[in-house]
Length: 209
Image (cartoon, rainbow, N blue to C red; front, side, top):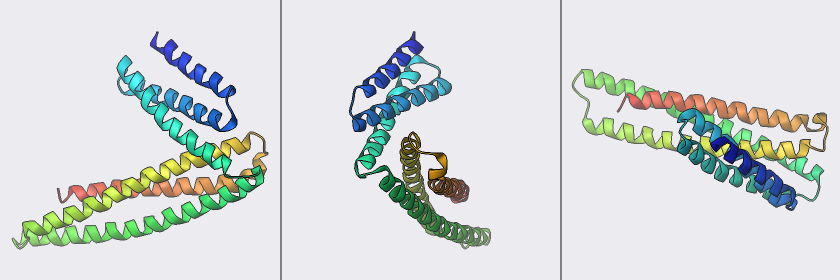
């Protein structure tokens, strides 16, 4: 029964999008896709009808936000060709930015591990002050929080870039968009590298818990 309700909601959103202008249709499609994905996650995590509905609601809101971002992007360009050129450049710049951020985060991680090792040596010799551990943990937590925010940001950027790419792919040949796709994949690889760095940072931060 619940599955039928969710299917009906998603179908209604799809039907509604067909009656809207291009921008609003994109928003509705994003909401429908997000709701379906959120419902699936809710079913996997809890299985309870409440979990499924909560997942659908949360996913719908996230999907609506992504759909709105895609709609606004599309409205910024006069032609499809303009969109392809500009979005390709935007993705390349984002990949460069996250690559530079990853380099900086690696440096912070090395420094953190060096400081932790020194602190552990001092602790073994009875010379470590509690305030030093507290300050080191505060710095590590602040860097980790910033990295998580950057990861959330780049995930949103990738979601929107992929959706805009799919919109362009609907009336383009894949070969025309090959360079754009390659640049999105590069951004995804750098996102994955950031995810790994965050995991390493979390492990190191636990050492000064």
